[in-house]
Amino acid sequence: MSLDTVFHNAAKTVFKVFKSLIHKVEFVRVTDDGFDDEIETKYPVDMIVGSFDAKDVETLSFNRLIQPTDIKGMFRGKQLANFTPSTTDVVVDDETTYSVVATQTDPARALWILLLRNS
Image 1 (cartoon, rainbow, N blue to C red):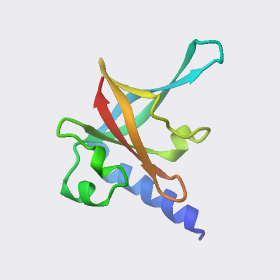
Image 2 (image 1 turned 135 degrees about the vertical axis):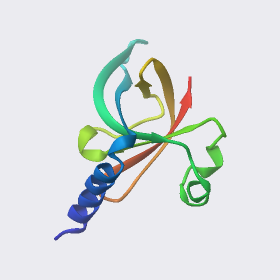
Image 3 (image 1 turned 45 degrees about the vertical axis):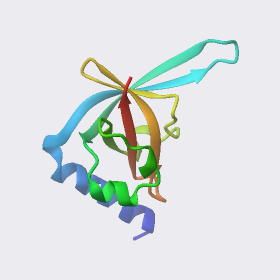
Image 4 (image 1 turned 90 degrees about the vertical axis):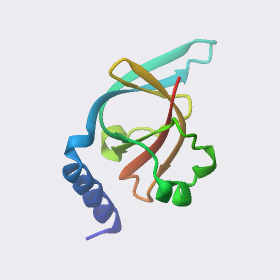
């Protein structure tokens, strides 16, 4: 079994265990068309939404950016395998829009962790 497979199986298990925390959100990819216009492409994503805890503040690469009102969003990499999430993207959960402030993933890109801020 390859290391990539191990990471992807672990991400799948996380989503099975924390099924009650999954939100159906809309991930909005915002790109520039090169002519001063933005193009929004929307993707439905299953995301575990929660708050950051002390362990996150100690271990995440973007820990110095975390503010008390920020939200942690996690999704499986297979859901958005065609691109890397960016700080120009947004996440819409119900009617609340969050800006993607920072991202982190594992070497296999199996699980993404996003720092989301109400925009």
